[in-house]
Amino acid sequence: GAVVSQHPSWVICKSGTSVKIECRSLDFQATTMFWYRQFPKQSLMLMATSNEGSKATYEQGVEKDKFLINHASLTLSTLTVTSAHPEDSSFYICSASFRGKGNEQYFGPGTRLTVT
Amino acid sequence: AQTVTQSQPEMSVQEAETVTLSCTYDTSESDYYLFWYKQPPSRQMILVIRQEAYKQQNATENRFSVNFQKAAKSFSLKISDSQLGDAAMYFCAYRSALGAGGTSYGKLTFGQGTILTVHP
Image (tube, rainbow over all chains, first blue to last red; front, side, top):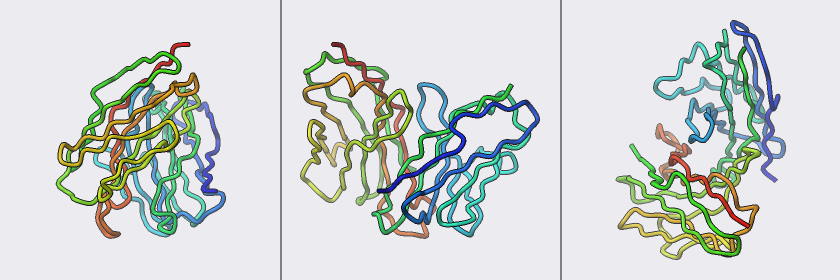
């Protein structure tokens, strides 16, 4: 149990376009979802925390207008990178948690974004 | 704010040997959780072991065990009988046990990571 999926696993987009990444909890209802960004051989950097039905809380230094997060249901959260630029190329990881599961975070497999 | 420090960017071990990864953290809280996560080349984050701060007994999971020293704010991971499949990046992480409503509720604070290489 506690499986989290992400789609797509890899996406290439052109500079200036927007790209949406989906994060789904497959077998539980996630009250909270987290979005992370990770550069090669570096740690995970938390971008934002989203709770179902409410606005996401962004970490300091993360542009909320550039990284749009929507948590429309208890099983789906989306991250949209708007007007992507090459410096947005990175590995994006989501995680989901539910109080009934001890508030553990269950991680998705990640999405590799390449902006050309 | 809490911080987690992993001072070993890279470690290596021979297959079947034992290796210890270090982690220290800083917090003013008394109740919290500590974790070790493994990130293999696939980059899927895998929970290795979890420790609750109020428990004095060190957590163990098969070949993985921790040495939790609360007063010293130290949380090291020992991998016994290392296997080739243990090769990965390992992250130490902290999570507050504070209730809902706090700004840090549920958040994980990660260390910098340690790349573990296992030699056959």
